[in-house]
Length: 269
Image (cartoon, rainbow, N blue to C red; front, side):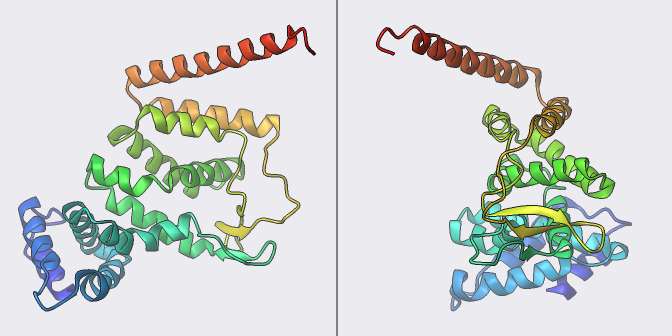
């Protein structure tokens, strides 16, 4: 695997690898020997090797980019939930950890693992594909948003810039009204009911088990900060989507006020 991708990179001029060469290599790697079970044998092994290449140092960035393209291309061409899970779960589970029976405040995802997962997302979406990006971001949109807000609130510039770039790229390529509505509905929540973000020992961000008694809701000042965050993201979305978003919010607000008015005038109260 590494020899194949390294050869591809070595035969390219500079850091630019021709798209047709990437596609040809991806089809070769993604082709199944007839005697092998795709989900149980072949793709898990391929995924492990590709992730190793995805995490190479910056001086081998072309190898990482090639691996990222191949991961995305295999997932996009196969369009199988099983294949998607094999390639995306190692990323998603480090950004949105599954349910754990951990102790209160126990570390669930270290800052190094979280950082690696975010870098992997950035590489995979570096080749714009609206459908693929949507599938990858669907389970992690709110966690990414919460990491961005935590980093912004705690002055962690590298984490803030990376997560904002990811959100901005997603909104440009695949952002829809439902995504903005989802963000708006999560304005007053800082993470999951099961886990929270915390300052890591190396100056980054880690994910910890939420204390049972810890409040899930945010205060007015933190909500105001998150409103500002949404306004930053709106700058990267088509005007028609923004207009529809605000009209939807207005409609929801008016319906809420109408309901309260009806309840206040209820003669049976």
